[in-house]
Length: 335
Figure 1 (cartoon, rainbow, N blue to C red):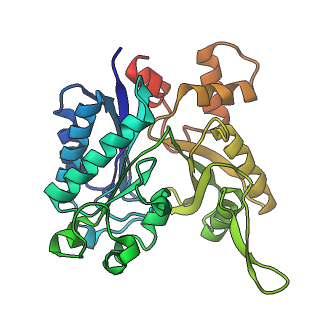
Figure 2: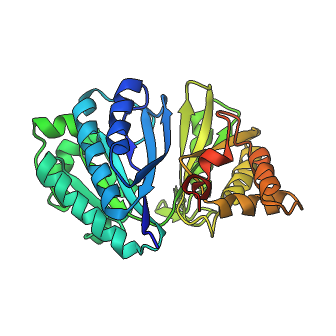
């Protein structure tokens, strides 16, 4: 039985088609790797690429893509709505078939060492691959983003796991890269019928697992947990569509699937007097997550009708047409 892992690198370029093509081309040239999805967003100025295949081949493809991104992306000139710390912002490995998370951890650490030593890029390990416990969470590593990297590298607590420890000319251009291993994550955004980013941020704080910080009656700061487990969320304004989004990472879709997140955001939006108009999946989604939504919204039994119902009720085609054959990972891999 073939071992299959998935890799979902995020590159800090979502506007220049030629640069994106150069990066993706490095992945496509590697044998035993299948390109599954390329999704660019001009407002985020980010491209999410999904590919899968044999573990060693996937690692090599990731290295070549990171190398090309370092050549064509100048982080000192980068602007975008999505948090980022480098040209290749994050590069996770995910077990798909006959592979353990521990094997993905080894691949992530090997790639991190190669990127740090051969390309001269500071590398932080995260997720299951983290060596330092405080670096498990991606958003903690990203704090301060690229602009805060010069000071971060001076801090003994934030010395990279691999690569240069100073903000030299090469790092000024490439930024840092976060490499790790995790289980399947769904990047899922819910669209709000408002341009007010404060509302999107408020809803994000209410629903995300980490919640929000409030001042209690004693004047003390206290954290109020959010409503949805295993969910990261932030508000984002999309200039291209003139709307805002609650942009989420569903870190355990079996606990909090997309339809549960959608319904909760919709409930909270109603309290602010606004509507949810649809949603989108960035990258790929497991079939089970769509089937669960289909069962929630309809009594249909066939797989095709359940997925169609999920797509319709979640409004997955509002911004870009949702085509299951191109968005469901099992369909893309022929599993």
